Length: 483
Image 1 (spheres, helix red, strand yellow):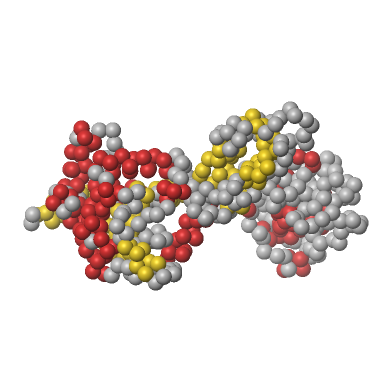
Image 2 (cartoon, rainbow, N blue to C red; image 1 turned 90 degrees about the vertical axis):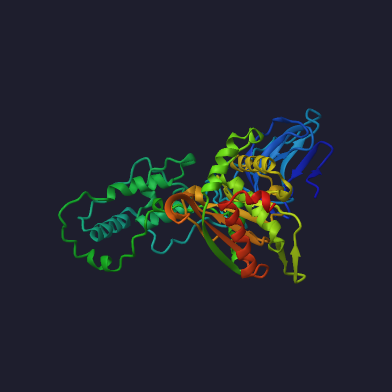
């Protein structure tokens, strides 16, 4: 896909590229340049997050940044222009560069009604009204201080307190646009829920806009201190019976947009769980000898400079088990109704990152020696934690390991990654009483769980693979005799 266009001999545009395999959108996480900055061919201008990873985008030409088309935090479709570059600065007059709108003021929640002389659009698709700006009053809205007083009295009665006197409207509250205060829709709803007349609220936001904090501050005086309940006035009694339920404060909840990696994970997990028939088998195994091997490998000069831990030996054990049972390394082709046997192993390792759980994989892990596998594991984990995992590193996995034991969890029932045949969950390794050579002794023990696609792997095959992994971890010398 062409990611740049030439609007004239002077200005060139750079489009959001498809940085993965068929991705349709990406979120702009951070701009590294601003209008007026000089850029050179290959310079990274922004970081974007796709459904698979965070990726840095380089600009493919020299020039001066003329315009950023989207602010940070915006999700942009592939193919949309995100930045314009002046490739011939100083050759003549040019339109003034426009910086991207601040991320905290997205288009979906624009500034409220603005200029006194007219009405600006407040929703996409709604133009400026040509006629009078007079509005029909909303049903149930508190339009006067008297109405606010009644609402406060009702709330006080519900709380078992005496009704406070209605606060006088602060002198600093200056109505805008013929008496209608400036506030965004969520703030208006909050004021309505709390029974606050916006005309009585002192605005502290930019350009006289009322904020959520302003509404809460205005509502604070209506909360009466603890006191003996007082009988409510007879005139208020009917209103109490018909009062609506109190809406909980939004501070009690946090809403997190589902996008980027988290959105992709959710879609993939739902697709996998309801497409592939999952089967999970468990086995508890004595890994004392494996832990001794790990300690010895840490002192081995051939392993110097690489990370050695139980996961390394477990990964090697799984690779040997797959070599002994190659039918488990397959995929289901729904379109052609075929089972696709893989003669290579791209070993996925589930990694927890600030952007969520991702599963990069070690390409051709079956061909790697133990030192090579250790180096690949270390690089994979470091890259994932730094948020630099590329989409290519997460594509094409065949089987996966997820180490839930690092969180102190004994085991789990992992869901398959889409397109893969099996996933091995490794539980916490703990010192437990165990029958060893006819006597109960403290041994290092863990539980393994293997989930597999029952269309590809029947119970016998799945059991053989899990049993082989357990046997190797119990007697690590089998890594030599079985490899």
